[in-house]
Length: 379
Image 1 (cartoon, one colour):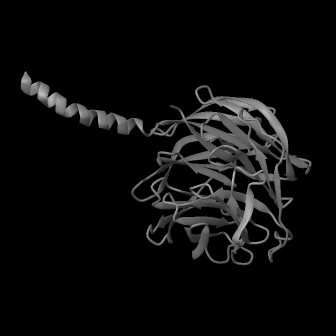
Image 2 (image 1 turned 90 degrees about the vertical axis):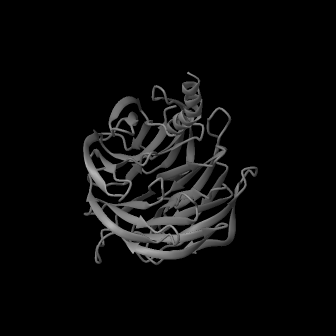
Image 3 (image 1 turned 135 degrees about the horizontal axis):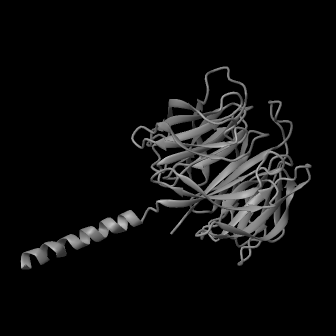
């Protein structure tokens, strides 16, 4: 009996560690979907419950009456969701704030604010949820809106208006497409598709106008590239920029707020000129990078990542539903979901974590005009 008790006492810490390890990574998530509304489009923001072990998505809830919530951001405490709202008539865009209950998937509108620009396409929050940053494609500007303690939005506190152009026919003026923070939250970068610039800033949340130009103030990409979206490697040592107009991915090393060019790699074969590169994400382990391209291609492109150098090596391309403007990888790294904006289908692929390769599953979500997918863990 004493021997049995001894064995059990020795095993309990091991079992406890195993249980804690398994509990550290949730297996169930809320999947929030934003996109365009109106005739033959969506009805608002949809919420699905996603099982990261089976890849099955089940409808939970939908908040209707929200005009064109084409990009979403979730607060770090998962209590609030923010959406940029495109005016279909080309007027000033708005920004909406919502309360969110991850158990039921219910969203409740808190307030709306004028965004201060036209055609908003991206927004993010700082790590302390003090400000929302909105990128405006058509007006070529970025605005800052403060966040109140109750999650509501204040009026625009800062506007950055860009100028300039590029050699491509789609670069007649500035077109701000996204922004991103450094890991410590003190540096901020803005991708301007219209001028081939990544604009660099210092960030101080204590200031009424929290963004000030860094030195240097920008990093130039190649003429006609059209930088669109950006993502850091998990170790934050490398920055990956997908470039819409040249259908390339640009790799930078990153240190103390300064990106240094490493590599450019094509997404399609030479001569492809449909200019539709859209989204970019790395696997959670940082071993693989995935990028989407639209035009006539409609592909997800897979690359292997050399972690010491950050460089990419092409592996394979995969067919997806038409116009994959947005895609996402679930936080466990088991599945990739690609939203075909014009194909009205979200394809769900199983990821082989050893090779990075994708296998299309029978699971899918039929929903029109989705452009943005965001995750919230169900605790």
